[in-house]
Image 1: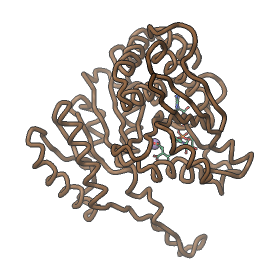
Image 2: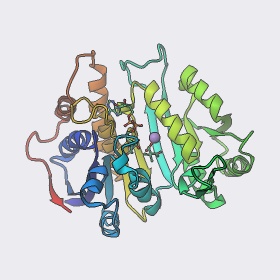
Image 3: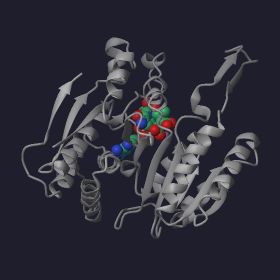
Length: 361
Ligand code: NAD
Ligand code: IPM
Ligand code: MN
Protein backbone atom coordinates (compact mmCIF):
# COMPACT_ATOMS: atom_id res chain seq x y z
CA UNK A 1 0.00 0.00 0.00
CA UNK A 2 1.02 3.60 -0.57
CA UNK A 3 1.38 5.65 2.61
CA UNK A 4 0.65 9.37 2.55
CA UNK A 5 1.70 11.42 5.56
CA UNK A 6 -0.74 14.20 6.38
CA UNK A 7 -0.22 17.05 8.83
CA UNK A 8 -3.53 18.16 10.32
CA UNK A 9 -3.91 21.66 11.69
CA UNK A 10 -7.51 21.99 12.89
CA UNK A 11 -6.84 25.44 14.40
CA UNK A 12 -9.37 27.67 16.11
CA UNK A 13 -13.09 28.37 16.20
CA UNK A 14 -14.95 26.34 13.60
CA UNK A 15 -11.62 24.97 12.30
CA UNK A 16 -11.73 21.77 14.41
CA UNK A 17 -15.44 21.33 13.69
CA UNK A 18 -15.03 21.37 9.91
CA UNK A 19 -11.77 19.39 9.94
CA UNK A 20 -13.48 16.58 11.85
CA UNK A 21 -15.95 16.24 8.96
CA UNK A 22 -13.22 16.55 6.33
CA UNK A 23 -11.37 13.69 8.04
CA UNK A 24 -14.49 11.54 8.03
CA UNK A 25 -14.88 12.06 4.31
CA UNK A 26 -11.18 11.53 3.61
CA UNK A 27 -11.14 8.28 5.57
CA UNK A 28 -14.20 7.05 3.73
CA UNK A 29 -12.86 8.14 0.34
CA UNK A 30 -9.72 6.02 0.63
CA UNK A 31 -11.18 3.13 2.62
CA UNK A 32 -10.64 -0.13 0.78
CA UNK A 33 -8.07 1.42 -1.57
CA UNK A 34 -4.34 0.78 -1.41
CA UNK A 35 -3.65 4.24 0.02
CA UNK A 36 -3.23 4.78 3.75
CA UNK A 37 -3.16 8.24 5.28
CA UNK A 38 -0.88 8.54 8.29
CA UNK A 39 -2.01 11.68 10.11
CA UNK A 40 -0.21 13.82 12.63
CA UNK A 41 -2.22 16.44 14.48
CA UNK A 42 -0.64 19.79 15.29
CA UNK A 43 -2.27 21.99 17.89
CA UNK A 44 -1.62 25.45 16.51
CA UNK A 45 -3.46 28.75 16.50
CA UNK A 46 -4.89 31.22 18.97
CA UNK A 47 -5.68 28.44 21.43
CA UNK A 48 -2.09 27.19 21.48
CA UNK A 49 -0.76 30.75 21.79
CA UNK A 50 -2.94 31.51 24.80
CA UNK A 51 -1.80 28.26 26.43
CA UNK A 52 1.92 28.35 25.69
CA UNK A 53 2.84 31.64 24.02
CA UNK A 54 3.95 29.77 20.88
CA UNK A 55 2.66 30.68 17.43
CA UNK A 56 4.74 28.40 15.17
CA UNK A 57 7.99 27.07 16.56
CA UNK A 58 10.89 26.00 14.34
CA UNK A 59 10.26 22.48 15.57
CA UNK A 60 6.62 22.63 14.45
CA UNK A 61 7.57 24.03 11.06
CA UNK A 62 10.26 21.38 10.62
CA UNK A 63 7.91 18.58 11.56
CA UNK A 64 5.09 19.86 9.36
CA UNK A 65 7.35 20.26 6.36
CA UNK A 66 8.33 16.57 6.55
CA UNK A 67 4.75 15.54 5.60
CA UNK A 68 3.40 14.86 2.14
CA UNK A 69 0.54 17.32 2.54
CA UNK A 70 -1.24 19.56 5.06
CA UNK A 71 -4.92 20.00 5.85
CA UNK A 72 -5.79 23.13 7.81
CA UNK A 73 -9.13 24.23 9.26
CA UNK A 74 -8.84 27.88 10.19
CA UNK A 75 -6.71 29.88 12.56
CA UNK A 76 -7.19 33.16 14.36
CA UNK A 77 -9.23 34.49 17.22
CA UNK A 78 -11.99 36.99 17.42
CA UNK A 79 -10.80 40.08 15.49
CA UNK A 80 -9.67 42.64 18.08
CA UNK A 81 -9.21 40.20 20.98
CA UNK A 82 -6.67 42.13 23.13
CA UNK A 83 -5.05 38.89 24.38
CA UNK A 84 -3.96 38.13 20.84
CA UNK A 85 -2.59 41.58 20.09
CA UNK A 86 1.02 40.43 20.17
CA UNK A 87 0.46 37.05 18.58
CA UNK A 88 -0.52 37.92 15.04
CA UNK A 89 -1.57 34.37 14.33
CA UNK A 90 -2.41 35.14 10.71
CA UNK A 91 1.09 36.38 9.95
CA UNK A 92 3.08 34.24 12.34
CA UNK A 93 1.32 31.00 11.50
CA UNK A 94 -0.71 30.96 8.31
CA UNK A 95 1.47 33.27 6.23
CA UNK A 96 4.62 31.80 7.72
CA UNK A 97 3.53 28.38 6.49
CA UNK A 98 2.62 29.71 3.03
CA UNK A 99 5.92 31.59 2.72
CA UNK A 100 8.23 28.98 4.25
CA UNK A 101 6.71 26.18 2.18
CA UNK A 102 6.82 28.35 -0.94
CA UNK A 103 3.10 28.09 -1.67
CA UNK A 104 3.33 30.41 -4.61
CA UNK A 105 0.06 29.25 -6.11
CA UNK A 106 -3.08 29.79 -4.09
CA UNK A 107 -5.68 27.84 -6.02
CA UNK A 108 -9.27 28.86 -5.39
CA UNK A 109 -11.92 27.26 -7.61
CA UNK A 110 -15.51 28.48 -7.74
CA UNK A 111 -18.51 26.65 -9.06
CA UNK A 112 -22.17 27.44 -8.71
CA UNK A 113 -23.48 23.92 -8.11
CA UNK A 114 -26.84 22.94 -9.55
CA UNK A 115 -29.57 23.59 -7.00
CA UNK A 116 -27.46 25.77 -4.73
CA UNK A 117 -29.14 28.83 -3.23
CA UNK A 118 -26.82 31.43 -4.75
CA UNK A 119 -27.65 35.07 -4.08
CA UNK A 120 -27.45 35.49 -7.86
CA UNK A 121 -30.85 34.67 -9.32
CA UNK A 122 -29.64 33.20 -12.58
CA UNK A 123 -25.90 32.78 -12.44
CA UNK A 124 -25.62 30.42 -15.40
CA UNK A 125 -22.83 27.84 -15.57
CA UNK A 126 -20.25 29.28 -13.26
CA UNK A 127 -16.95 27.42 -13.10
CA UNK A 128 -13.86 29.52 -12.70
CA UNK A 129 -10.51 29.21 -11.02
CA UNK A 130 -8.70 32.01 -9.26
CA UNK A 131 -4.94 31.54 -9.32
CA UNK A 132 -3.90 33.86 -6.54
CA UNK A 133 -0.20 34.56 -6.06
CA UNK A 134 0.72 33.31 -2.58
CA UNK A 135 4.14 34.54 -1.56
CA UNK A 136 4.44 38.19 -2.57
CA UNK A 137 2.44 41.40 -2.84
CA UNK A 138 1.58 43.48 0.19
CA UNK A 139 1.59 40.27 2.27
CA UNK A 140 5.38 40.04 2.57
CA UNK A 141 5.62 42.31 5.60
CA UNK A 142 7.76 44.90 3.89
CA UNK A 143 6.42 47.79 5.88
CA UNK A 144 6.80 49.98 8.87
CA UNK A 145 5.55 53.06 10.54
CA UNK A 146 7.14 56.12 11.98
CA UNK A 147 5.80 58.63 14.51
CA UNK A 148 3.21 56.02 15.47
CA UNK A 149 0.34 57.38 17.48
CA UNK A 150 1.01 60.97 16.50
CA UNK A 151 -0.92 63.07 13.98
CA UNK A 152 2.18 62.77 11.78
CA UNK A 153 2.22 59.00 11.66
CA UNK A 154 3.32 57.44 8.38
CA UNK A 155 2.45 53.79 7.81
CA UNK A 156 3.88 52.01 4.78
CA UNK A 157 3.05 48.53 3.53
CA UNK A 158 5.04 47.89 0.39
CA UNK A 159 3.76 45.48 -2.25
CA UNK A 160 6.63 43.30 -3.45
CA UNK A 161 6.37 41.88 -6.97
CA UNK A 162 9.37 40.08 -8.43
CA UNK A 163 9.80 39.11 -12.07
CA UNK A 164 10.58 35.56 -10.89
CA UNK A 165 7.54 35.37 -8.61
CA UNK A 166 5.10 36.82 -11.11
CA UNK A 167 6.38 34.68 -13.97
CA UNK A 168 6.02 31.37 -12.19
CA UNK A 169 2.47 31.96 -11.04
CA UNK A 170 1.41 33.37 -14.42
CA UNK A 171 2.88 30.32 -16.16
CA UNK A 172 0.97 28.03 -13.80
CA UNK A 173 -2.26 29.93 -14.58
CA UNK A 174 -1.69 29.54 -18.34
CA UNK A 175 -1.16 25.79 -17.86
CA UNK A 176 -4.47 25.58 -16.01
CA UNK A 177 -6.25 27.65 -18.66
CA UNK A 178 -4.81 25.46 -21.41
CA UNK A 179 -6.31 22.39 -19.74
CA UNK A 180 -9.71 24.05 -19.20
CA UNK A 181 -11.73 26.45 -21.39
CA UNK A 182 -8.63 28.28 -22.61
CA UNK A 183 -9.41 31.70 -21.23
CA UNK A 184 -7.22 33.69 -18.90
CA UNK A 185 -8.09 37.00 -17.27
CA UNK A 186 -5.42 39.06 -15.59
CA UNK A 187 -6.89 41.14 -12.78
CA UNK A 188 -4.87 44.05 -11.46
CA UNK A 189 -5.09 47.82 -11.12
CA UNK A 190 -2.63 48.92 -13.77
CA UNK A 191 -4.17 52.36 -14.04
CA UNK A 192 -3.01 53.24 -10.53
CA UNK A 193 -0.44 50.64 -9.44
CA UNK A 194 1.69 51.37 -12.46
CA UNK A 195 4.94 49.61 -11.55
CA UNK A 196 3.54 46.32 -10.30
CA UNK A 197 0.77 46.51 -12.89
CA UNK A 198 3.27 46.92 -15.68
CA UNK A 199 5.30 43.92 -14.51
CA UNK A 200 2.18 41.72 -14.34
CA UNK A 201 0.93 42.91 -17.74
CA UNK A 202 4.28 42.44 -19.48
CA UNK A 203 4.69 39.02 -17.90
CA UNK A 204 1.26 37.87 -19.05
CA UNK A 205 1.93 39.17 -22.55
CA UNK A 206 5.28 37.40 -22.70
CA UNK A 207 4.04 34.05 -21.37
CA UNK A 208 0.98 34.26 -23.66
CA UNK A 209 3.31 33.75 -26.62
CA UNK A 210 3.87 30.16 -25.38
CA UNK A 211 0.10 29.52 -25.20
CA UNK A 212 -1.34 30.66 -28.54
CA UNK A 213 -4.60 28.74 -27.85
CA UNK A 214 -5.36 30.62 -24.65
CA UNK A 215 -7.38 33.82 -25.06
CA UNK A 216 -6.13 36.52 -22.71
CA UNK A 217 -7.94 39.52 -21.37
CA UNK A 218 -7.47 42.05 -18.63
CA UNK A 219 -9.73 43.68 -16.04
CA UNK A 220 -9.08 46.28 -13.40
CA UNK A 221 -9.93 44.75 -10.03
CA UNK A 222 -12.81 47.12 -9.37
CA UNK A 223 -14.45 46.22 -12.67
CA UNK A 224 -13.75 42.54 -11.98
CA UNK A 225 -15.99 42.75 -8.89
CA UNK A 226 -18.80 44.01 -11.12
CA UNK A 227 -18.48 41.20 -13.66
CA UNK A 228 -18.08 38.51 -10.99
CA UNK A 229 -21.57 39.46 -9.87
CA UNK A 230 -23.21 40.29 -13.21
CA UNK A 231 -21.54 37.77 -15.54
CA UNK A 232 -19.62 35.19 -13.47
CA UNK A 233 -20.05 32.51 -16.12
CA UNK A 234 -17.74 34.37 -18.47
CA UNK A 235 -14.66 33.65 -16.36
CA UNK A 236 -12.39 30.63 -16.73
CA UNK A 237 -9.01 31.26 -15.10
CA UNK A 238 -8.27 34.49 -13.26
CA UNK A 239 -4.68 35.25 -12.33
CA UNK A 240 -4.03 37.98 -9.82
CA UNK A 241 -1.85 39.15 -6.97
CA UNK A 242 -2.06 38.06 -3.35
CA UNK A 243 -4.33 40.81 -2.02
CA UNK A 244 -6.69 41.14 -4.99
CA UNK A 245 -7.00 37.35 -4.97
CA UNK A 246 -7.90 37.33 -1.30
CA UNK A 247 -10.70 39.82 -1.82
CA UNK A 248 -12.05 38.35 -5.07
CA UNK A 249 -12.25 34.85 -3.59
CA UNK A 250 -14.43 35.87 -0.65
CA UNK A 251 -16.73 37.50 -3.22
CA UNK A 252 -16.55 34.33 -5.30
CA UNK A 253 -17.50 32.29 -2.24
CA UNK A 254 -20.50 34.48 -1.60
CA UNK A 255 -21.85 34.19 -5.15
CA UNK A 256 -21.31 30.43 -5.17
CA UNK A 257 -23.81 30.07 -2.35
CA UNK A 258 -21.78 30.92 0.71
CA UNK A 259 -18.27 31.09 2.04
CA UNK A 260 -18.89 27.68 3.64
CA UNK A 261 -18.53 26.16 0.16
CA UNK A 262 -15.22 27.73 -0.91
CA UNK A 263 -12.17 25.45 -0.93
CA UNK A 264 -8.53 26.23 -1.59
CA UNK A 265 -5.10 24.78 -2.06
CA UNK A 266 -1.83 26.50 -1.24
CA UNK A 267 0.35 24.77 -3.76
CA UNK A 268 4.06 24.33 -4.12
CA UNK A 269 4.00 23.07 -7.70
CA UNK A 270 7.68 22.11 -7.64
CA UNK A 271 6.98 19.53 -4.95
CA UNK A 272 9.88 20.76 -2.83
CA UNK A 273 7.51 21.34 0.09
CA UNK A 274 4.13 19.93 1.07
CA UNK A 275 1.10 21.75 -0.28
CA UNK A 276 -1.59 22.87 2.16
CA UNK A 277 -5.34 22.61 1.71
CA UNK A 278 -7.84 24.71 3.61
CA UNK A 279 -11.27 26.28 3.35
CA UNK A 280 -11.16 29.92 2.21
CA UNK A 281 -13.10 30.99 5.30
CA UNK A 282 -11.72 31.83 8.73
CA UNK A 283 -12.41 30.62 12.25
CA UNK A 284 -15.85 32.30 12.37
CA UNK A 285 -15.87 33.14 16.09
CA UNK A 286 -19.50 34.25 15.73
CA UNK A 287 -20.71 30.67 15.16
CA UNK A 288 -17.87 28.62 16.70
CA UNK A 289 -18.70 25.72 18.99
CA UNK A 290 -22.34 25.60 17.90
CA UNK A 291 -22.17 23.03 15.07
CA UNK A 292 -23.48 25.70 12.73
CA UNK A 293 -20.54 25.80 10.30
CA UNK A 294 -20.89 24.33 6.85
CA UNK A 295 -18.02 21.81 6.49
CA UNK A 296 -18.41 21.63 2.72
CA UNK A 297 -15.47 23.97 2.04
CA UNK A 298 -13.19 21.80 4.17
CA UNK A 299 -14.52 18.66 2.46
CA UNK A 300 -13.96 20.15 -1.01
CA UNK A 301 -10.44 21.05 0.16
CA UNK A 302 -9.95 17.32 0.74
CA UNK A 303 -10.95 16.76 -2.90
CA UNK A 304 -8.28 19.27 -3.97
CA UNK A 305 -5.78 17.49 -1.72
CA UNK A 306 -6.59 14.07 -3.18
CA UNK A 307 -6.32 15.45 -6.68
CA UNK A 308 -2.96 17.04 -5.89
CA UNK A 309 -1.69 13.68 -4.60
CA UNK A 310 -2.67 12.04 -7.88
CA UNK A 311 -5.67 10.26 -6.33
CA UNK A 312 -8.02 11.52 -9.01
CA UNK A 313 -10.64 8.80 -8.54
CA UNK A 314 -11.06 9.52 -4.83
CA UNK A 315 -11.10 13.26 -5.53
CA UNK A 316 -13.87 12.87 -8.09
CA UNK A 317 -15.86 10.70 -5.70
CA UNK A 318 -15.68 13.32 -2.96
CA UNK A 319 -16.73 16.09 -5.35
CA UNK A 320 -19.62 13.98 -6.62
CA UNK A 321 -20.77 13.26 -3.06
CA UNK A 322 -20.72 16.99 -2.28
CA UNK A 323 -22.59 17.80 -5.49
CA UNK A 324 -25.26 15.27 -4.67
CA UNK A 325 -25.58 16.64 -1.15
CA UNK A 326 -25.86 20.22 -2.40
CA UNK A 327 -28.46 19.28 -4.99
CA UNK A 328 -30.70 17.95 -2.21
CA UNK A 329 -30.35 20.86 0.20
CA UNK A 330 -33.79 22.26 0.88
CA UNK A 331 -33.02 24.70 3.67
CA UNK A 332 -33.64 22.23 6.51
CA UNK A 333 -31.03 23.11 9.14
CA UNK A 334 -28.33 20.46 9.69
CA UNK A 335 -25.46 20.40 12.14
CA UNK A 336 -21.87 20.44 10.92
CA UNK A 337 -21.58 16.75 11.81
CA UNK A 338 -24.82 15.84 10.05
CA UNK A 339 -23.61 17.40 6.82
CA UNK A 340 -20.28 15.56 7.14
CA UNK A 341 -21.97 12.25 7.96
CA UNK A 342 -24.35 12.54 5.04
CA UNK A 343 -21.62 13.42 2.54
CA UNK A 344 -19.43 10.60 3.86
CA UNK A 345 -22.34 8.18 3.58
CA UNK A 346 -22.58 8.89 -0.13
CA UNK A 347 -19.11 7.49 -0.74
CA UNK A 348 -19.05 3.78 -1.47
CA UNK A 349 -15.89 2.77 0.37
CA UNK A 350 -15.95 0.25 3.21
CA UNK A 351 -18.48 1.57 5.68
CA UNK A 352 -16.37 0.75 8.74
CA UNK A 353 -12.73 0.94 9.81
CA UNK A 354 -11.14 4.25 8.90
CA UNK A 355 -7.91 3.57 7.01
CA UNK A 356 -5.76 5.77 9.18
CA UNK A 357 -4.40 6.35 12.61
CA UNK A 358 -3.55 9.64 14.21
CA UNK A 359 -0.51 10.62 16.24
CA UNK A 360 -0.23 13.64 18.51
CA UNK A 361 2.70 15.94 17.89
P1 NAD B 1 -14.62 34.36 8.68
O1 NAD B 1 -14.47 33.74 7.36
O2 NAD B 1 -14.14 33.58 9.84
O3 NAD B 1 -16.17 34.73 8.91
C1 NAD B 1 -16.89 35.61 8.06
C2 NAD B 1 -18.39 35.25 8.12
O4 NAD B 1 -18.60 34.02 7.43
C3 NAD B 1 -18.89 35.02 9.55
O5 NAD B 1 -20.21 35.51 9.66
C4 NAD B 1 -18.89 33.51 9.68
O6 NAD B 1 -19.85 33.01 10.60
C5 NAD B 1 -19.22 33.06 8.26
N1 NAD B 1 -18.63 31.75 7.97
C6 NAD B 1 -17.31 31.47 7.80
N2 NAD B 1 -17.13 30.18 7.56
C7 NAD B 1 -18.34 29.60 7.57
C8 NAD B 1 -18.81 28.25 7.39
N3 NAD B 1 -17.96 27.22 7.14
N4 NAD B 1 -20.13 28.02 7.47
C9 NAD B 1 -20.99 29.02 7.73
N5 NAD B 1 -20.62 30.31 7.90
C10 NAD B 1 -19.30 30.60 7.82
O7 NAD B 1 -13.88 35.77 8.61
P2 NAD B 1 -13.54 36.84 9.77
O8 NAD B 1 -14.67 36.95 10.72
O9 NAD B 1 -13.05 38.02 9.06
O10 NAD B 1 -12.30 36.21 10.53
C11 NAD B 1 -12.36 35.47 11.75
C12 NAD B 1 -10.95 35.02 12.14
O11 NAD B 1 -10.46 34.08 11.19
C13 NAD B 1 -9.92 36.16 12.12
O12 NAD B 1 -9.01 35.92 13.17
C14 NAD B 1 -9.24 36.02 10.77
O13 NAD B 1 -7.96 36.57 10.74
C15 NAD B 1 -9.20 34.52 10.65
N6 NAD B 1 -9.11 34.02 9.28
C16 NAD B 1 -8.38 32.88 9.13
C17 NAD B 1 -8.31 32.28 7.88
C18 NAD B 1 -7.56 31.02 7.76
O14 NAD B 1 -7.17 30.40 8.74
N7 NAD B 1 -7.29 30.54 6.57
C19 NAD B 1 -9.00 32.81 6.80
C20 NAD B 1 -9.77 33.99 7.00
C21 NAD B 1 -9.82 34.57 8.26
C1 IPM C 1 -7.38 33.76 3.52
C2 IPM C 1 -7.26 34.62 4.74
C3 IPM C 1 -5.80 34.99 4.96
C4 IPM C 1 -5.31 35.78 3.75
C5 IPM C 1 -5.50 35.77 6.26
C6 IPM C 1 -6.12 35.12 7.47
C7 IPM C 1 -4.03 35.95 6.45
O1 IPM C 1 -8.06 35.74 4.63
O2 IPM C 1 -6.80 32.66 3.51
O3 IPM C 1 -8.07 34.15 2.58
O4 IPM C 1 -5.49 37.00 3.69
O5 IPM C 1 -4.76 35.16 2.86
MN1 MN D 1 -9.32 35.76 2.85
